[in-house]
Length: 124
Picture 1 (tube, helix red, strand yellow):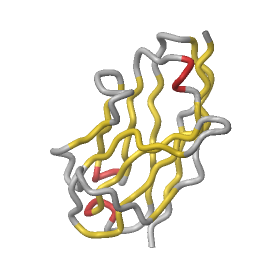
Picture 2 (cartoon, rainbow, N blue to C red):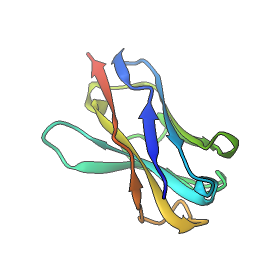
Picture 3 (tube, one colour):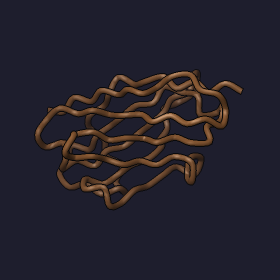
Picture 4 (cartoon, rainbow, N blue to C red):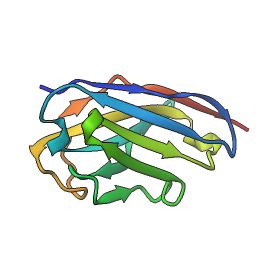
């Protein structure tokens, strides 16, 4: 079982930056691909980014490509989402999710574990 806890959300002006963290419990977390999703008010949860188990492959939604960077530090059991050039439309609750299959790629869509989310608000 894996538990995920997001942090780092907050209020930022358009054009600013934030770094989200996803801290995980469990000895096997370093073997799981992990991703980020977001859900804006009144909208469905959508995919943002995914990183494979060892960090050498990533995938992004077109809406964040070139502005967001996903990375991981397996020694710390933590995955990050660096967000730059933020826009008001990036406002959402951001969720971390992990694939329960070992050694998952960045290209799978499987996610088995979810965090509770952290709010990001971008003001214009």
